[in-house]
Image (cartoon, rainbow, N blue to C red; front, top):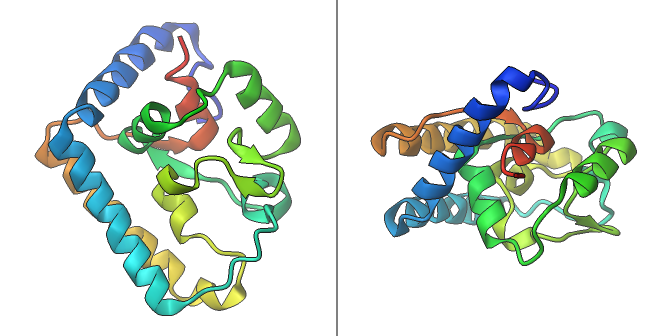
Length: 167
């Protein structure tokens, strides 16, 4: 999916999905379960001790050669907890430079609320031996959270997913 709104006929469906994810993440029990998965990621990452050089490379997807994918619930979590709402202009500018709309110079502007893909990705080459497995395991937990709460599951590119939340 290159853009959540690439087809005008998909706009009403995208709006409905975004609304459902926002309603779901507003439920305390759903937010707590997602935060518990993020806390598990933090504990496992801390036990491995990867290096983060705060270079901002991980936020420049094009330069590093990767894409950040998130679930709808994760995007709703970031959108509702960010101190600075993201705009279409910020998303467009981020795409043009190949990065994340929340990157502030070399730092993550939503570090404490960032999605799982950001949490487990490290430029540190020693992390590559375990980060994929950890990501897949915790992503399965997020999918189970969606299913247990009857929340439609979608997994899409970060910036396209964010676009779904912009009126």
